[in-house]
Length: 236
Image 1 (cartoon, rainbow, N blue to C red):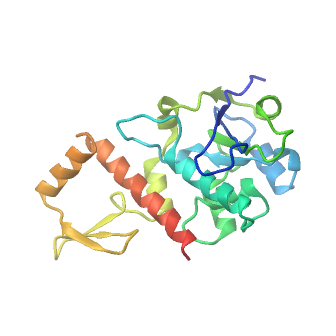
Image 2: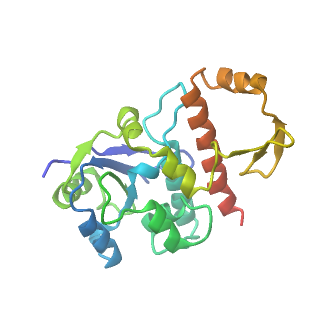
C-alpha cells in the first residue's frame, strides 16, 4: 500500500501538543471495510472518516492549506474534548457530529461520515496520546486504506466538493438566501433576518467583495451559511 500524504497542523487556541493530522484519499476501494470497523468499535480505527464530497472548500483569494469547513468542526470537537463536554463516544466521532446543524448524532454520521460506497474520503486523527504521531498514523493508514493518497491542499480539495449535496444536506437554497418575489427582499436562513432588495447593484457589490468571479461569490456565501448553521447548533 502507498504511504499516506499526511498533513499535520496546529489550530490556534487549542493545546500546543494537540496536533491535527489529515489525510485525503481518492479512488477508495474498501470503504465498506472501514465503515464496519467504526460500527464494530475497533479502537485501532479511531479516526474521523469523512466523505470528501460534502466538505466546502475555502475560496478566499488568499489560499490556505485546509478546508475552513473541516477545521471548524475539528476545532469545535477538540475544544469540547479538552473541556470535557463531548456528546459522543470520543473526539473523533465528535468531529463528525460537529458538522451537523442539529443534535442528531446518528444523522450526522449518515450525512457526513463514510458509507460503503464512498470513493473519496478524509481521515482525521488527533494526537490524543504520545503514541499517536505522524509515523504511526501514516503506517496504519497505508496498511488499512485501499486508495490513492493525495496531498491535502487546495487544488485537490476542490475536486471533491459536491455543492448540490452540501446545499441539500444543510437545506440551503441559492447559498442560503431565499428570495421573496413579492417583496424583493432576501431572507438569510442562518440568521432569520431579511436583507436589502436583491438588485443588480447588490449583486455587483458582492462580486467586488469576493473577487469578481460568480462561482467564488456563490461558494463563499455558501461557506458562510454552512459555518453559521454549524455554530447555531452549539447555541441550542
